Image 1 (spheres, rainbow, N blue to C red):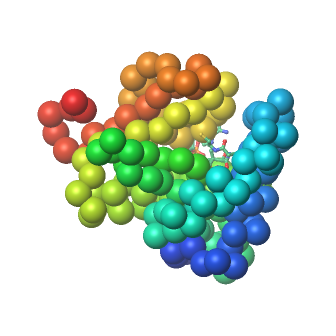
Image 2 (image 1 turned 30 degrees about the vertical axis):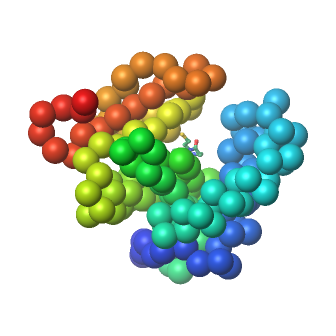
Length: 153
Ligand SMILES: CC(C)(COP(=O)(O)OP(=O)(O)OC[C@H]1O[C@@H](n2cnc3c(N)ncnc32)[C@H](O)[C@@H]1OP(=O)(O)O)[C@@H](O)C(=O)NCCC(=O)NCCS
């Protein structure tokens, strides 16, 4: 298997939409209707942050993506997704590492993200050095990682 990352292209949007839909249906089924009603807002966020949207390809097939945004001086991971058939092959970790490297190259020293407490994605973050700092909106866990010494402010 050959894994390659590249910046997103407009033609990736249908696959990204499918990934987001799969996430909602798996983890937030009660919010699927609300999510659909806000599709225009989601699309706006993907487009507004297009340069921070990275796609993973395995053997040139779409395998996953990650999107981050700048939020209050931090690089916030908005979404990360790997197609089911490619999971546990290091794709998620590779996307996470690229997000970290891209954020650092743009001067961000703090990474942050939210995750449901029952989503095993948290183990990916913990393995990558993210520290749980408490609970945020909707009881999601907040995680941070500092890219320089001295700890997060
Ligand atoms: C979370 C997700 C992106 C992980 O992608 P992945 O490519 O499978 O992750 P990796 O193979 O890079 O995993 C690296 C390490 O993270 C940890 N990890 C990842 N998924 C895990 C799981 N389901 N259970 C336990 N540990 C896990 C493991 O330590 C793993 O190393 P190992 O496979 O050698 O044990 C993927 O499961 C996914 O797309 N989930 C649905 C979308 C989602 O929930 N996104 C997160 C929203 S906050």
